[in-house]
Length: 537
Ligand code: GLN
Image (cartoon, rainbow, N blue to C red; front, top):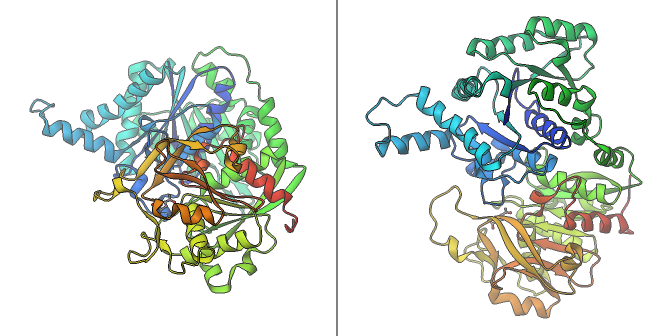
C-alpha cells in the first residue's frame, strides 16, 4: 500500500483539495484503487456547526458525516464513496485523546502531543488503509505549512512515512508562485521559504505543484528545482484553469505528474485513459447549447457556500451538452425590488438549502414567480420547504402559512420540526443526516427522471412537510412524488401543469458527478433550455 501526503504552502485557498482529487482521477484511471482523506487542523469536531462565511458549504456523506467541502471534490473526481473516516479534525483527535485519558488508557503516563496526539492521527491513516484496502491513500493536510495548529499533523505524517518506509510514501507540496505585475515576473521566493519551513520539520517534498497565473518557463522550473531540492521534472505547473476545474486532471497529466508519482512509489500501471474526461471538457468549453439559470440564495458572492449546487448544475449542463451561466440572485434583493427585475429571462430558477430567516421571503417570491410564470424550478431542502410555503399562501389561501423554523406562532405550520428533532438540544451532528431511502410514485416527473422507484439520497435538515396538510395540498394539484418507505416523510414534491417544478427535501447535489450527472439536475437544465421565455446571452 502506498501513501501520498499533500500539504499546502504560502497561502490558503490554493486548491490543494482539487489537486489531490485530480491526482486521484488520474491514478484511478490507471487502474489503481484510490482512497482520499482530509485532515483539518481546526478544533471544531466537524464543520457542521460552522458559519458558511467561515467555512463554505458543509458536505454531507452517506453515513451522515458533516465534512469539509474538499470531500465533495474527492467524490466528484473519483468513484470513491467516503465515510466519516475520511475527514479528521483536531477537535476529533483531542476528543479521542482526552476520552482515552479519562478512561485511564494511558496507564498513568503524561499525555502529550507527541506521541499521543500524533499516534491518534497516524492511526486514522492506518484505519482508512485497512478499511478501504486501496492501492493508494491520498491524505490532504488542511491549512498552510507553518501554522501552529497544523504542526501535529505534519509531524504525524513525517513519522508515518518513516514507519512505512520512504518507498511507500511521498510528500506533495502545493505552493504558490505569484506574478508580480510591476516586475512582470513570477516569483519563487515564497515557495523556497515554504519548502524550507517543511524541511525544518523534517519533510522534504518529492513533488512541488506550483499554482500560478502565468506559465512556468524552463529557467524558473530549474530555479525552483535547485533551491527546493527537487528534480526539475517534479516541479509541476498548475496554472489557473481557463474554463473549468475539471481541466485540472488533464493539466496534471500533461505535466506527467501521474507518471512521476507512480515512478516514485514504484507503481507499475498503464497510462490513464482519459477520453471520457476529455469529452466532458469539450462539452464544458464548446457546448452545443447555452442556458442561464438563477440560484436564489443569501450567501451570494461567497463562492464556496453553494459549491456542490453549482457543480451539480454544471454537470446537468454537461448531460445536455449545454453551457450554463449561473446567475447568483440575492434573495434580499428580491424582497426589495420584487422578482421580475432579477428573474426575468432566466431559463430556470433554483432555490438551494439554507438555515435562518434572512432572505426567506425573497425565496418565497422567487418560487411564486417560477410557479406562476412557468419557469422551471428546482428546490433543494429549504428550497422544497419554500415551495410548500408559497403554495400554501398563494394557492391554498393561507396567507400566514410558514415553517415553524421562521415563525413559531404561525396558524398554518405547513413545515414543522421532525418529531425526532424535538428533544434534541445539542448542536452538531444532530439533524436528520445522511443517506436514506425514498420511494417514488409511479407516473410522476421524479420517477421519470430517476428511471427508478427506490432511491437513496443524502439529508441534512430538522424540519419537514407537515402531514396534517397533505390532503388539502393534494386536492389543489400539489403532487407528493416521493416519500420515506414508511410513508411518513415527504421527500419529493412537484406541480402538475408546469413544465418543471420539482423540489426535494434531500440534497441531490451531493451525489452528482461530471461523469454521472444527477437526474434532477439533468432534467432541470433540459427544461431550462427548453423554456421558450428564456433569454440566452
Ligand atoms: N432549515 C431547514 C431545515 O432544517 C432546511 C435545511 C437545509 O436546507 N439544509 O429543515
